[in-house]
Length: 162
Image (spheres, rainbow, N blue to C red):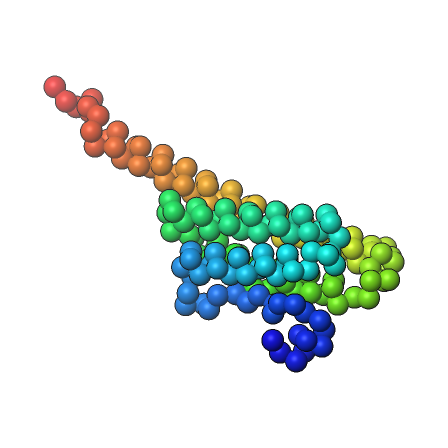
């Protein structure tokens, strides 16, 4: 653990995204698992709703990665997973946790409290990852329809058959 992490009182290091050349589902899942440990280690310092939403987000990330068992992940899905795991969610949580507890529920310039802002940011990430999951599933459904049309053309009788 670095001296800065010890100074801040971090129990675990901030998770990092897998290396760009290692986009294998196993590496992505390992990074998600590290992020889950990061979130769990800070559970007592996060609002309960933020903890639940952050874990729901990590579950959705796992669903995206698990879809690779059917077909390889699209490059955009990989980029989204890597970005959320290695940057967006850890930065969002870390920034919130760096605040003094007594200012977390005090409205700021835009009228939102830092806690409300945290919840909105996690919701935005969830929306993005959910859209990635839907796109991945639709890609699988489109592939199945394409395969069905191919098989029907290949093996069903044609109108030209006598």
